[in-house]
Length: 222
Image (tube, rainbow, N blue to C red; front, side, top):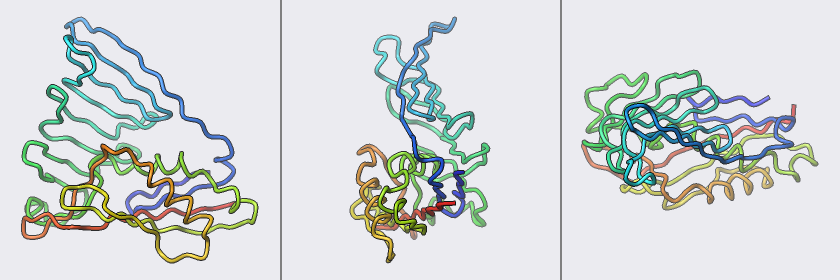
């Protein structure tokens, strides 16, 4: 069984479910009555659905939605390949996480945040997308490390990503742990994050600062 507790930046991986994992990629194209071209792109259990320019179908233009299985996790608009306006990001079960305004380069609203009105000036470090995206990526890449599985090792790994004021990873490390088979696998998987991923750095007094994004992963053999 696989458990996600993304509110607390945790992923639970169960060995029984991770013995056989594969990522399938395929794309479909449809033309709606208005003349817009819609593309659907499947990468494993992540499903992108978006409009493109009729004159250049490689450029996203219009509504964009990303689903994990049947769960909507990202929704927004593209204009000639660029994200514009307010995007909404969700967790499992369509649970709202946060809204981000790409025109203003600022967070609009965060679930459960007590001081929404100051988010343009004071805000935490976040992944610029659904928080489910990096978790599923790690889930697919890490699986259950064979050495750890054979030795019956369970435990947790704290992955820390140091984020620059520009929203890029400048350093990564794992917290202290006795389970090197687990920590090395998580660290290696994080090095394969796509280059175009971005994080929202922490803001203090309306200034972006170097910050840290933490992901805790639990490995469970039972």
